[in-house]
Image 1 (tube, rainbow, N blue to C red):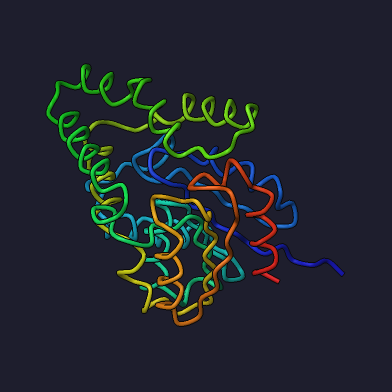
Image 2: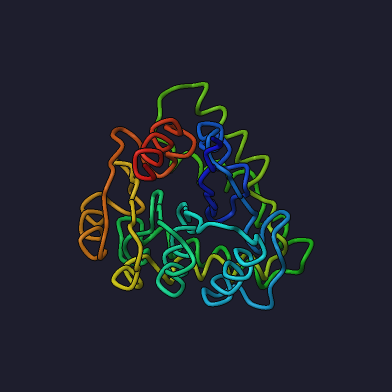
Length: 259
């Protein structure tokens, strides 16, 4: 008797591509994995607008195009958690379960990185105003990639740190253009999972890093209480980059939750 593989649709974070979820995917051989590039990045679709409603509409259309026989499980990482949670609140009947990895569980402009978020808003605003050729160089500047990477990486393992830097240098600047990047960043910091948590009508798992300083653990503990059917899985000694630093533990939590 052939056992059907559960389908897992995985939505990556801001300035990422599907490559960022590859290490987790490698740990899930018994799943049918669908990992698109989200609109505005790499091979993702081009949209007229990159606000949250547009991302929700895109995801709804994308899932319908898969013509799946069984309801999929939806996973979102970071910015992908905002998109996935908002989608689940609106279209709970189209998915079986929801998994949010390092979810944005509190307002970015009020968190411990509020000042850095304000600086980032200014950075993307400047990029939007510059001529296209200069804007692309400004927005893809290597020092910015290095600063962002260093600020989020927690592991002391040199090989892992080297891998993270390599991945970010390869894929962090595969945005479509200055408009899509600016608008998607504004969307990412203007929304969070709390806005839609109470309306999510499927079992939901939060996988969080204990040392994530984008959304602190206490805020994730508050968030899980807002979910009608929520569980919290905490991975110790890691921050926002669980998909790079502890992909095996993320995959184990996924498998336990799906079972």
